[in-house]
Length: 353
Image (tube, rainbow, N blue to C red; front, side):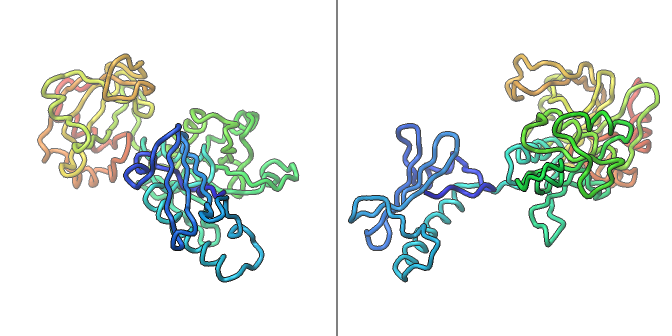
């Protein structure tokens, strides 16, 4: 029996178009090879777990000679090669690549992608599985995922390979964090301002993501945060996904997925992404961290914020080029605005405060 690589994930909607048949709560694909002597059988359950085997059509039993690691004859080599080529085609058509080996690491990578659009890169040629997430405005790491023997983390003597993420933290919080199960002094980074978090579900996703969010903020360039009064934010809106123009034409108050630490009373500028690439709307947040009781276009498990439209700009007021001149170089997720952009908003929008 062969299992799919731990860094690949079955994409269930791709199975039937490829040729799988769904029956008895599983998907099955069969392909005869070696002139009808053998049949490759691939089975996928509803959870996306994959197994495969070779059926010997003449002997009417499972064929296993290709699994033997000792040197084998030319015929067995031909069977192995033909079978592997079938599996390779199934993987290419029906699987998506995962960035890391552990489930929690991949869930967090997906959350990072959804929240900010950040993807990992792999900076070490000799350690190709180490993945770094960088702040888009200065290219600094805010998270480094790596695989190490457990002993290097906890001194237990265990050689079990574990996956960890290094995160930057406020040095004043180190002692409290290290008292929590699953959080350790940073591996191969400054122990005064970084910690290593074990990614085996010892620490729940929500807690790890909160640390990720803070790490990203700590390494990023410091946008302006008012000592008093509201914070000023910019968030992206993709017109290919969400018709924000129609939404605001019909409603001056709308619900939006809760972003970052935006609070009621804050000012939110909405940057419409390509092909527009400009701040088009300015809103005030009326409510934050609200329960979703019926916004059909937003997943029910996501918190909401309620925003009120204050002003609509023409696209030449704050286009991307001017935003860059004023210190906002990318809008892939929610971020605080710079003083320069805030000055423009204040001059353009009456009663902004």
